[in-house]
Image 1: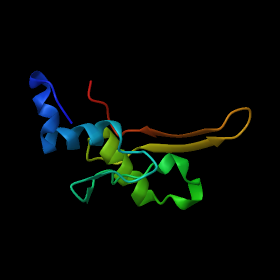
Image 2 (image 1 turned 120 degrees about the horizontal axis):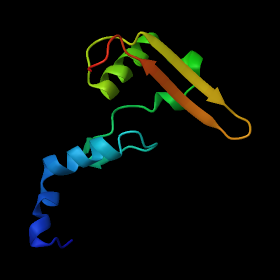
Image 3 (image 1 turned 135 degrees about the vertical axis):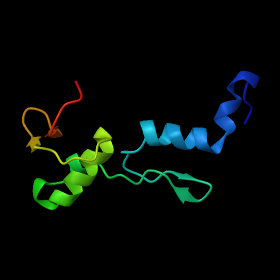
Length: 97
């Protein structure tokens, strides 16, 4: 592989880990860099509502929001018709503004 001189940062391990963490954390197959699995967070919105525990919701909420509080409300929504929609909606305890 050849990189342009000004794109040298893409050869650094930390930079690649940051990109995978930001853009590829929820894909359906594992991603490895130097034998280490990078995408550790599961896409819990694709799982059945009854299969996801409150602790998993709390962990996922804290990961996504970057906060340490618990969500005030959690809505795990799934619809099949006319299109398939899977989503999770969290309302935090407080807002930052």
